[in-house]
Length: 269
Image (cartoon, rainbow, N blue to C red; front, side):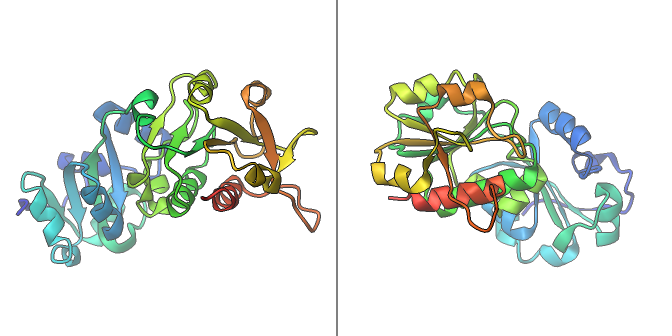
């Protein structure tokens, strides 16, 4: 059993991993420096543990000690900071839903070439998506629709930021993914492996999603761009084709996470 440590001072230095969780810029620097991420809620904590991530510590209200006992037992060296829900709010800066948090160690990034050694047929690429909610929703859709691999570009929001993880309901731990280091340069690697790079954009030469699915390409890399402006011209130039989702009711486009979900469902095999 992990050691239980009751904490009553919000300034206790042992709680540093959990300080001011709503301040994105601060958290990005802290989490990158210390190689950690925060899981919020009992289900997400459990899914991170099941995926093999190693906890640094847990921050729990007393009522969660029993239900998470099996998770805590797996990591006897990780301290469990037992706090009131009021103190958790003081530390984190917001009301901690369900009073359960955990700090986990990040795992080393896996190179794209290594991931492609597996049987990968469908890839989702999220390019420069800046909203963590959209990133999390995109991962959840990818997991639900059987996407084999998710790639995020260098400027995409962090899939392991607390909000992304929470919106994904922990599915970010289930779908293999990595952050690309060269974009759109690494499209060459995918195309050399036989992937058709399909960029979702409203262009004069775009085909419909129905036309894309009718092609029945064996390997697809589906590319989705940032909120508002979409994919940049130099990315579209490197893609094999552009795709649009036909709209009704005078609507020109969907939210990027919604577009991804529709595309993942339509291209499932």
